[in-house]
Amino acid sequence: MDVMSSVSMLAGILVGLIIAVFLLKLLNKNRRAKTEYDERQEQIRGRGYRYAFYTMVIYEAIMLCLSVGGFLNIPVEQYNFHAAGIFIGGIVLCVYTIWNDAYWGRNNDMRRYIVILTVLFALNVFPVIATIRSGIVLVNGYWDFPFVNLFCSIALAILAVTAFIKGRIDKSAEEEDE
Amino acid sequence: MKNLRLKAARAGMDLSQEQLADICKVSRQTISAIEKGDYNPTINLCIAICKALNKTLDELFWED
Image (cartoon, rainbow over the protein chains, first blue to last red):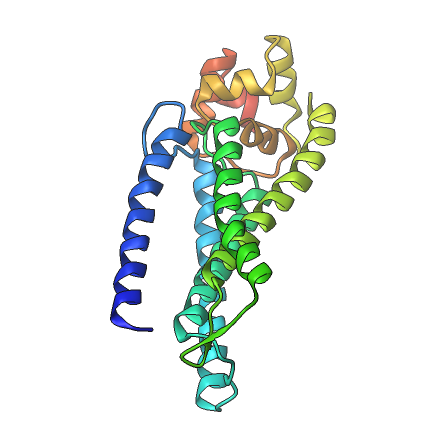
């Protein structure tokens, strides 16, 4: 990756983080960036972070072994492997917390949440589809493919499927509870 | 172990899980988990639930 590409990528990450803070404020009913969780949810989230951490450590260890052993001869930029680790850890956290009713806080607005996640999915899946349609080319010996967008799309799709299944299960359980 | 006394007290006050959860500032799923016996609440949450349902800790949470 040349200097120009690195700078533009870092700028993109920075802009993304700023947008994320604004989106978090927009997601919450009380317009606060901090999502409020109750004591049970905090407990579950703590466990979720632990599982996500273990997953990332195991993933990085495997990648390290593969790299040292010379098995990573794929024409993909190295940062993509690390990005994949972050996304895998994030998926573990999200799926675990969704499954245990600790993903959405008390002050989250579900409708806005779904809209924003759908928009994020569309924004990420668009460059992936566009690249596939135009054909993947090799640039400086690497595939010119938006892998980070692909990881993000997959993560959001997994999140949506988990939330949908959990919602279905909860609906029938709710009727029994009440 | 299921907390049927909590469920009965809530039903007695004609409150849904969602309404009790809002009063106690927790999620509906947390109230559901307490009633099912899947979650042991902290003493602070027990007190909040007791106050919301006009019951004592003994009446709702003490196991005989």
